[in-house]
Image 1 (cartoon, one colour):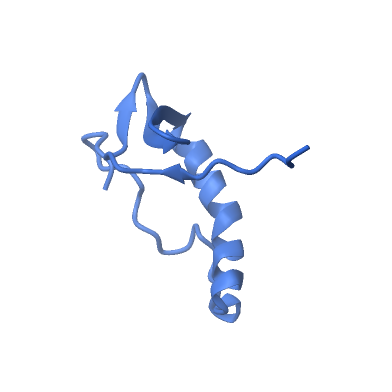
Image 2: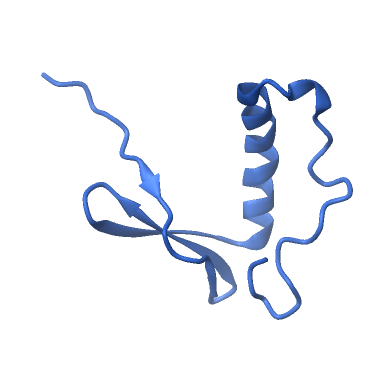
Length: 82
């Protein structure tokens, strides 16, 4: 039996706001479309968790600054993604 393999997610479209949630359109698998939806607060929590892991993988973990310090807001007042 072949072990399961993760399906890569590829983003080719611009994220948008739908019903108050930020939607990230992605391609999952071969030609299958999917949407990752979350509130702006949830995207912030996702970012806060993933940022240190990405920094560590890149080798610049020593210069990590808390994500909430000195960052520009994710959404503009017009609710469009930066």
